[in-house]
Image (cartoon, rainbow, N blue to C red):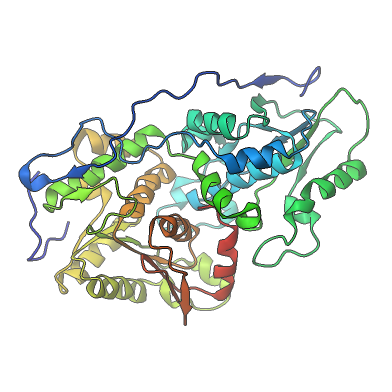
Amino acid sequence: MQHPAGISRRPAVLAGGLLVTIWLWLAFFDGPSLPTHIVWNTSSKGGLTSPSIDAFDFPPVDSDEMRAVCSSTKWNQSLIFTCDNNHGGIGHVRNSILNCVRYAIGAGGALVMPNIALRDEDDMEHDHGHAEKRHGFGRKGMEYMFDVEHFSESLRLSCPELMLIGHLEETFSPRRRGLLPEHLFTNVPASGIEHPEEWPVRLKAWIEKHMPSYPEKEPIVIDLEQSFLHYPTHSDGHKFAHTFGNILKFRPDVRRLATTTLKKLAEWYDMPLNVSELIMNPSFMGAHLQTDNPFLERRHNSDVAYAHFPAQTAAYIEQAISAKISLIYVASGNLPEIHKLGLQATASNIAVTHKEDLLKDKDMEMLERLRWDQRALVDYLMLLKAQDFAGVGHSSFSWQIVMTRHEGGDKRKGVLESDIWSDGVSTLYGVRSSYVESSGCMWS
């Protein structure tokens, strides 16, 4: 890692014809409570307050707002939704799964535990592959990215009416069809479907049109296709919108690796960190480096300045200088470009680091056992904690970070000036007004 002067671095159902397995979670969460104030002051060689601490853990969601929505829903256990078409990076997958849950609740149906489509890692190094080439490599369960017990327990507490089904065989039935929910709406602007409360009525009409009414004992199964930025997250109110996303929590080993990465950063740079803060201030600047993506340029049919290394990195360094932050933690799968950024930042007396630089020995081995998209979860958690954040407007990963950080910051309204969006704790470069409108369909 680059280490300029001024930085102290210490060495280191279908009933009958279909097989349905009902997933039951009966035990209440009874894990150890986290301390309310945690400070890593490595200059006193204190290290972690507890060697097993998980700085990113939180209890299952217990939400009055979610219970109110669920209790007012008319439930129909003969209606089942699957949610297996969740592909792309963490920004796409997370929002897609949350949309599945919200659509299932809205229609009063049961939900089969979601699956995640794998991506071809040979195409992922620079994220240059066509979208269609990065899918179709099999599926994994939710545990591929998320804490399944947390998900199930959160829904049991906050939406007890929702039945979760562990597995449903992929069998043919005339009462089973795929559906992209927004296709049932005639007008879907960038801000999302205009009247999401019409979903159950529109769905009922679609079922009556496309599904046979017999055999009545056989449930109706709807395979939800991936819905990304079309459901207006605040349609149920602000509190619901900013609680609902917490039903998804990353898997424990990823959280522990991110905690270790924070600890190593604190040790290497003699930086006391209060990890109980949602956004640690003072600490470091987080940056999402995603450059030179030809698929992006083809999609937009124009040159996107901040999609390229020179403009992107110059903006990031200038942001760090303005914020008087002398350390940048970079999230990127392109290590050579991280090193180039490090050399460039040295001229401004700014150090650059990343997870592969901080993790050693067994921790590094644990990281290397993870697939590409799983490793990105470590970066995701690190960026949430940063004092300041810089990303790019064309990336769902960057936007997902921004939306979550916004809730932990001073909640100033984001402002778009030219093509730069900022809310005081995060800045995105290369932002179009349509991106800002669509962000209202991304769960925080």
